Structures are given as C-alpha cells and as structure tokens.
Image 1 (cartoon, rainbow, N blue to C red):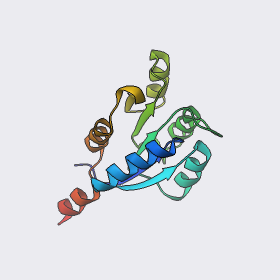
Image 2: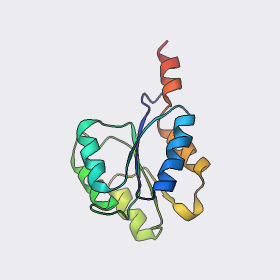
Image 3: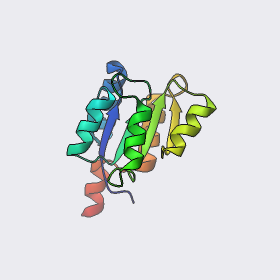
Image 4: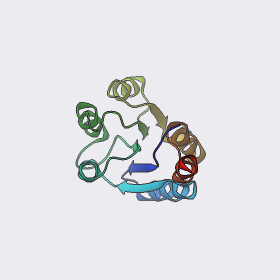
Length: 134
C-alpha cells in the first residue's frame, strides 16, 4: 500500500489550484501549492512530496524544465508526477512520459474527480496511512 499523503500542486491558474487543493484536502491529503516552476523547485529543496501535480505552461520555469530537474535528481526521480496541462499533442505527452510522468491529463477533458482518482491510484490519503499504521 502506498505510504504518503503530501501532494505538491504546481499550477499557475490560481482558481484551478485552489479547487484541487480544497478537494484533495477534503479527501485527506496534505497539499502544498506552487504557482510557478521556480517556486516549485524551491519547495522541493525543503520537502519531498508523495506526488506532484504539474502544469506545463507556467511563468519563470516551465513544467518541462521542472520535469527535467526532477528526473535528473535521484532524490526526486521516484516521486510520481501527474501532468495536468492543456498541451495534449502526442509529442508533448511522449516528452513528459519520457521524463518520468506517470499520468498525463488534458485539462479540457479532465474533471476534479478524475484528478482525485488519479492521485488516489498512486498514493493514499493521510487518513488511510494513519489507519494502516495502527
């Protein structure tokens, strides 16, 4: 069973980020937010999450660059990454999968329920982790 519950959302759309955060916290996850790639890399230096939800088109440092940094560092390369982006072309999907993304979701075709389902398939919420340890 997956052991972990910290989710890092890297998304420059504040509304979407807050919506995901609220829903994932309701499901029992601890959520940290970054609104650009630079902020995300600074957060990663301090704390390694159980899972990352990553947009690709962001200010300062793109999601592709974040993926390259994560995949090149053994400390982060084992953290599952769900890419949530409007970039849905096959070449973009192949590129992020080659960099280690475990799931690619296209924003216009994805609901918050789909995101929660994807997260739950990869990591357990804190409430489940605590229950499993008792």
